Picture 1 (cartoon, rainbow, N blue to C red):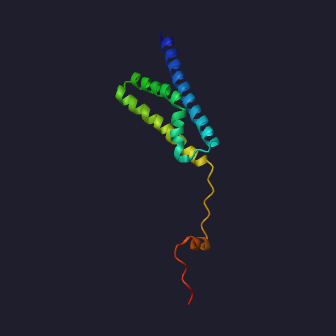
Picture 2 (cartoon, rainbow, N blue to C red; picture 1 turned 120 degrees about the vertical axis):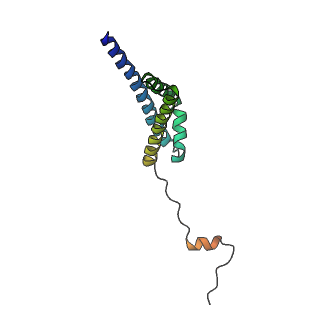
Picture 3 (cartoon, rainbow, N blue to C red; picture 1 turned 45 degrees about the horizontal axis):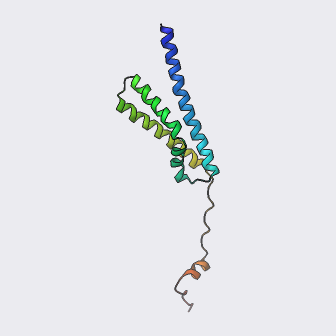
Length: 126
């Protein structure tokens, strides 16, 4: 009997670990796709949330289920799961920002170019 309970706990933990792995793999793939598509750092998190919605939902559900089975209320469990998922997105957003290619800075206009664009002529030397 105890062996059955232990094997059920291990199997349940493995399912959650698999879902976590799937979600993290999705985030990893999303980062690679975003980099290939040259998505800016400000758009990565939305891109990842859209791309990984299918793996996020079962992972979040498994977190809620595990928390409830450990005595948390459904409301607390849902809030905790949402926070954990949000933490994953934030972490990967930071990773993407650190790893994203840096755009070349725009060249500063030269003084002559600034004068040429000005509506008023430069003062005449005296």
